[in-house]
Length: 378
Ligand SMILES: CC(C)(COP(=O)(O)OP(=O)(O)OC[C@H]1O[C@@H](n2cnc3c(N)ncnc32)[C@H](O)[C@@H]1OP(=O)(O)O)[C@@H](O)C(=O)NCCC(=O)NCCS
Image (tube, rainbow, N blue to C red):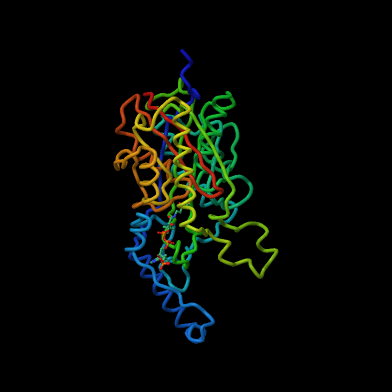
């Protein structure tokens, strides 16, 4: 009989953290619609002359129906409910102070370490990822490594919403190769600064949260453990989700503050492209282990759109998935970019008995896709 396929590594700890401030769809739309009315009044003449299109109002009913999002956690809402501002107030911090994204990372990391029964000094590899990193260098991962008193080394990675699954694979591979024995993956998704809160098509999408996952050799797991049976990545070039914010921006002041320097997407096109890609990708991920979709107890899918996840799960299973089989955290958290599917995993794995199988799968900008097939080992 062929050897059982496994990486020999396991998820041994997980922790989720979010800022305490909630912004629900009603408050969000109230501020947005006030911004729209003021902007249209300011440009009434140009609109009347046909030189400018009037902005349209948003509605909580549309947001729920189109996305499944009811509310989100945000770092600061004073700036988001101010129709004259429409972006968060986040005071700059002196270089001697802990940076905001490292703070997000530490909140989640400490929870993950506690679940695994490990301390900061046990960690010998930190992979920190986010769809947007607050700076280029020094790496935020190294700041987190220093704060936790960890050994080894750290690095930052970014791959849109698939960042989390890519970071988990890097960590699992390092543990497989014996380069690390206790790898911390942390995804501090501070997304509110790069969302365009003035754009009707997308102003409701993103939310702030942080999640951490610890990976160790399966044999070293102290308590509950999810064995990583297999991993997979795929990518295919697309411009449909993009953010042009970067260090070259200031070299062209005429476009420096243009809306393309924030998250923007062709949501409908993304929906149409990604549903079939994700279906095939998940089938291949589990098929590589000789498993069929109905043998998978749980699907922790990327949390971008409820209708999209329902459709993907239905195409994989040939029937509707139950809310337990394919759990959603979107209604409460909004789209937390690369943190979404790991948060779904962390919050919806406890009830599954030893031997259960699950797939974590993320998909997003790039396009990029990543999956981990997990089996509860202890
Ligand atoms: C973004 C998304 C929620 C939009 O939902 P949608 O059903 O595709 O909506 P559309 O953009 O096609 O807009 C439908 C209609 O609602 C209108 N609309 C758009 N935003 C609106 C808002 N905030 N309030 C009210 N109406 C709105 C549009 O103008 C359009 O009107 P029309 O039919 O008269 O032209 C959805 O496409 C999506 O989530 N796609 C996947 C994105 C994804 O996974 N991205 C990954 C990011 S990490």
